[in-house]
Length: 240
Image 1 (cartoon, rainbow, N blue to C red):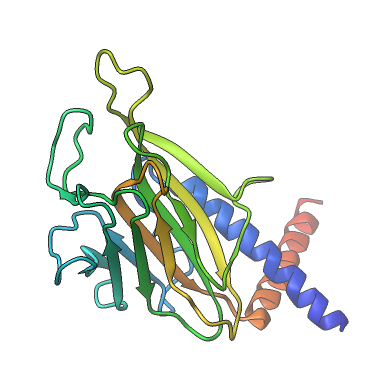
Image 2: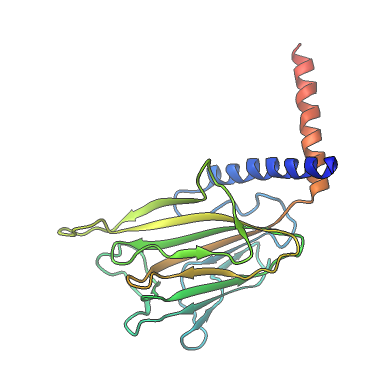
């Protein structure tokens, strides 16, 4: 029992350190470091930011625009547009700034994203860039997974990346990037990633990035913690 507790505590410490470092390393506009846990597949980053290559009619299947590392895994977004006036917007358009090829999902529209997983457990970064003003923030959910803290007391982070307000607008118009982190425990069935538009105001989505990581083995985590403790102790002795 004690060994299990030690392993769990050590895993929590390592995850916290690594994930906080990843947040700090993130760029101001769209991407996380795609190699923060090394080269053990499927450690894969999927990018949907163009949306131009659609397969079939509504609902539309969309392959990622970019997968890192190349050939690293399979991913598919299914986009369901609910409102007759909603669609893929080519842009650029007044009020939407520099963005092109983004989705107006309409009230109740949705995206469902499926990616490769591993039965040993996974961690998913989910990043969604949406427009706030004409529409509102979508709801992000990963069935079967639990949200993880990104900062003390915060499960979600948001960052304004472009102000698109026009003269005379009564409310701010802007593109915002939403970020959240989800843990899928070993043996739990992955239900995909759901991005759902508001039932009244809808949602407008420019880009989605999913960063998928296998959980580290508990034994490797414990060894890493012990090794770091030994190194710190050795350095302290050297200083004295």
